[in-house]
Image (cartoon, rainbow, N blue to C red):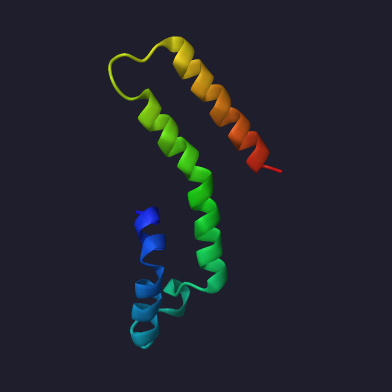
Length: 80
């Protein structure tokens, strides 16, 4: 859903700008909000890829542990 929202950011921004009178101020997305959403999307993308790599009936424990190590490293790097 986040990926789709980022793809149609211009349309969402247009909709918000044309309906300012009916949309609460707290629900309007600022430039900073969009930047934060892009950052969140980038962080979550590796979890999506990991999920796709581990789906199916032929996943082995060593593959799961390897992917978990990659996710842990990704998470640790993002805390800095």
